[in-house]
Image (cartoon, rainbow, N blue to C red):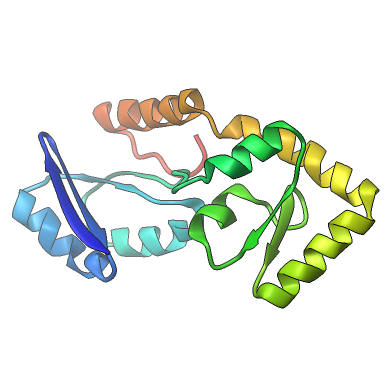
Length: 162
């Protein structure tokens, strides 16, 4: 899927390969500085792309498409099993800590059997999932973004966890 979303004063360009046009997009907009936003898993790539750009900041704690079912299960201390290839799941499940990430259907069956047979592991992962689900709130996301925007406004460079 590719799309371009334009809204004043924001423009979002999204889609496979769109990152290759980042420098041209910055030039097209006549931007003096840019704020780059990424998920934690893409932070290193974003920092490499930022080289040579006038940077206002990097916010690398965006949570992309956190599946609501994972958070709802975590609220009830239920661990989740999901595919590692799903970006949203890898941002919301900490493998072996709050749930289990698998690579294929065989791994999925094995992980499910393990959790069904091992109530101690199931409860431990569930408790940790429940504790972690507090990170997925609109208030937390808004506070983190507010911190980044305040830093950009004051001319400070920010990066990492806020």
